[in-house]
Length: 328
Image 1 (tube, rainbow, N blue to C red):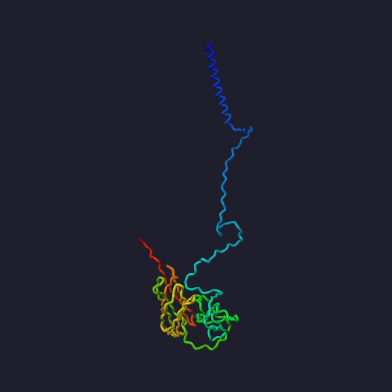
Image 2 (cartoon, rainbow, N blue to C red):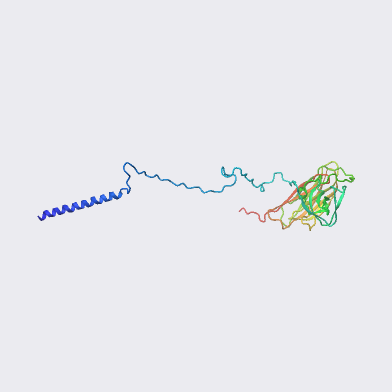
């Protein structure tokens, strides 16, 4: 009897354990099922994932690089050409349009004429130390148009009567041939046969110098014509880094620069150049402390007569570096 009860109790425990496992499995299956069931005959679509593409940030682009966008009627401003390279060929550019340079008269009164020469009517006189504007020139750089007389008129004065006008600015001035219509001309003096051209060359020796060194500027002017030519002038404005010391010339006259002038210029004059003859002038200068290492000092020299187009030459002296490079 006791054994029968033990067998029944064992089967009851086994049945209880099996029932517990089945119930636990059912709960697990129910927990894994979806919480929302689809209605009969209808399926719930599975949503397709979408990616949000990043929007590019707007960036500024230079004018003219956009293919589209903006007002098509808006003109594109041209680029500034200030930094453009000058045209090839070198030389001093001639002035275009209205050009004026400041100058002043010396310690004496200066006569002003209606044309480029004393043979024209005298319009008046400029007082000493008068500030003027130089507006034009003749072909020979001997006469210049200045403004103004005390009564407001403009007229012609001789180059000797103007101070502070560099040779470079003289050449840049426009040639004035019609400043006054039909000026009253006086009788012209007889002149020697005028050369149509002059030949000019200039060079420094040595071509490289340091502050405190002397350099020699050799200027050669030649009359290549078969007739002599009168009243030949060579002029040059010294750069700030050069100081005039002395000068020598062949059968000519040197006028040294005014040491007190802001732009000192020297002049060489010949009353007459023989036919097919060259004349040499040597100017001694000192390189001043204003010159910096590795700089190049350029000087312009001009030669002309009253009846010829001026010719120019360029002379250069350079400064070496303060210390030579060490290639070790």
